[in-house]
Image (cartoon, rainbow, N blue to C red; front, side):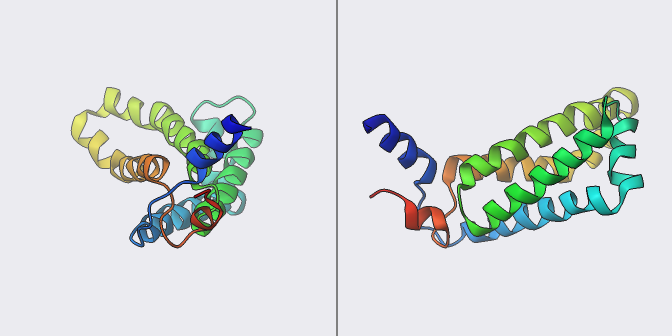
Length: 147
């Protein structure tokens, strides 16, 4: 029972800081819009894109990724299980880095890579911040956090 309480405290604990809402809004809105686009703009961001970057079963991976992006972004926007919701999104960002950005570095050079990676880099750092810092004052996590 003590281990369960400790794990719950680690997941839900957060600082009583109101500024984190800005980070949650940025991350949540961007990932929600990207997730929904995987369903609506199929030729550019859906299975066709996943096939282009070398995924086997691109339809499965596109829709799974889109579903995770939408679901996790809703959790982050509401501040519910923010740390846990950030982990799948961070995995998506790492996969995108390996599949789409590293090849740019290898083929087009550092400056093109830096230009292409700027948004992904920012989102990755914001996700890491949410994992370490938590969801802040205006969240469900702080209401559910054990004292």
